[in-house]
Length: 473
Ligand code: UDP
Image 1 (cartoon, rainbow, N blue to C red):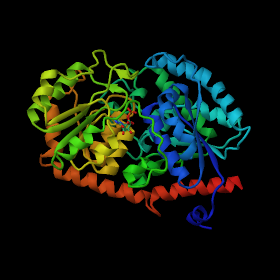
Image 2: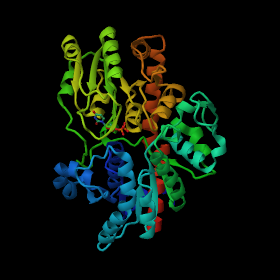
Image 3: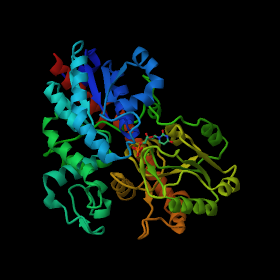
Image 4: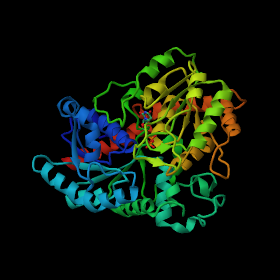
């Protein structure tokens, strides 16, 4: 019978184990997917690292009782107070100790329940081996753009497609994509990147042989050629945009949240008092911290532009990716000068901000979660990419999706005041601003359609569930 019938008619007695690191950008899509699964009556257990557990502790009393999501923790092998911004030690240790610790946890859990499937994300590739040892079928939740999946896959399986990667402007021609430059590729492939990130991704591509389904957080319509180009290799099935039920106007099925910092609610009231499409929202996600020089240039550009702005400046020592002269505070005189038209917060409810009519555009580091959140809300983007997948996401936004512009950095890696002013003008009032907003709204529409009944993402999701049901019977 048709897949949709199968899903609608059955009350599946399915239990799924999800495994993720506790980083904000990894746990958010894991949770969003878990919420979608429990809305179908599926039971979900999320296994994540204890350091994340400490952060989530304030939510755990509510989690098992009324959310349908069970949280379980395993040790990453490091002490609570270890500084995990030492990513090399962190990744080496979790890769060495994580498998046994996760395996012990699964042994314990499976004394009382049977998992139909495990859903793992690519940044814990060793978990694919662990669940295989426990004979649990494995699905992969690819939490970045499908484009990145294709790039990594091709790089590690057929390196001949790539030129030498030490020349930033060298051309790269890959199936399903416009001609790229080396600097548009994910930074972990470049010689300048520490080797441990690249090794992690190489591990993941090898482990893919043990994966039965590759589900993508993106949606087909936005990356159709790329997705099709993978069909004859190891196909990816997009089920996104994988964002929270809130952004889709759906009822929250669970009150679980795992924010690194408490969101400052006052910014929503502040936005309420601003005219429609008048505010630049600025945030660099949970890890990236700007250098003092970069921050100063944004300060000057904002002063000159005379626009309203809401800026997230994270607290110090967040264990993230930091440049040498990392900046955590804005100059006092700037704050005074822009009082009323500018608000600076340490963390915000980004989804609520992006849904707010006062927001005109998002100056973003282009993390994939933030990018999906702009696509589903129709907010134009000023791309300020730093590392990992961000340069590729920024290329997609400017050249493929065309819902934003990318800042060009100078030879010193810094965007000048003039360049930032150009980008603000371009998305807010220049001759292209209307076209960019129109594209953003078209994408918003197609993103929502993908998730509607019979939409591309709904069909992929239902296909996955029905295959699980069949496997379970
Ligand atoms: N986020 C938030 N409040 C903020 C900044 C970010 O809730 O002030 C959320 C944002 O909505 C997104 C996530 O944190 O879901 C960041 O993930 P992303 O992949 O964009 O970037 P990362 O933090 O992994 O670099």
